[in-house]
Image (tube, rainbow over all chains, first blue to last red; front, top):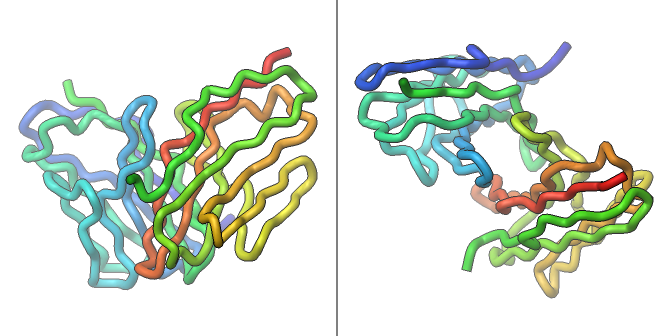
Length: 111
Length: 109
């Protein structure tokens, strides 16, 4: 089955820790994206990558980092510099001018 | 002005009703448009793509008016399962997807 997987589904982080969220796709899509969604709010773009070994900051990149070493993978690291990281994190991919497909999301909670 | 704006909602309608959502966008260079639905605590899922003037899929009809820069979504014969948040999305020339804040729909028995 083609699709996007994210892991873990739930993640708990202590203050001051870095954590990495996984995103993998087997749709052969060139572009991948990370979004953050807070309760009752819309999606906000963190980072995106349109090709391997290249990525750009979105609207709220501060406190986050990404890498794109393989076409299939686009991990997101939430660093200790992100002051309010508790949120729902969504990864997506797309090809050309066509629609985005989303993974099931990771719910991150800071303890 | 936000790049994509939607009816704030929430819309509470009885089963069987027809409901319409509007969405306006400010970037006249937008290429493609989409409607997604998002259930509570789940990921958005594609409902319809709108590449030309409109699209129809069963009970759902999307219309695009480029001159006025708005798209609409019409849902006929609402079902309880249609209850969700509906997201208006457009793709600009930078290949960035821009999401509206969403409109919440509750279909009541």
